[in-house]
Image (cartoon, rainbow, N blue to C red):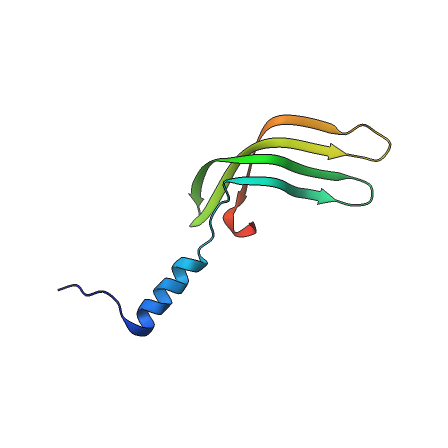
Length: 89
C-alpha cells in the first residue's frame, strides 16, 4: 500500500517543489552586457516555450534586442528569439 509522505519527509518535498526555478511569462528588460561604453539587452519579451536541457529548465522568449554605443544611434531589432536557464530569473 502506498502512503503519502508525512512529517519531515513531506516538508522536505514541499520545500524542494517550492525552490524549483520557473520561467516568467514576460520579461520587461534582461541586460546581456552593460558598461560605460556599451549596453546590450532584451526588452518586452514574451515566453514562447520551455525545454529541459541537461536536467535544467530553459526559458525561450521572443522580444526586442537593443544595443547602444555612445555617439551612435541605438540598434533596435524586433522579434528576436533568446533563451536562458530558469535559474537566472
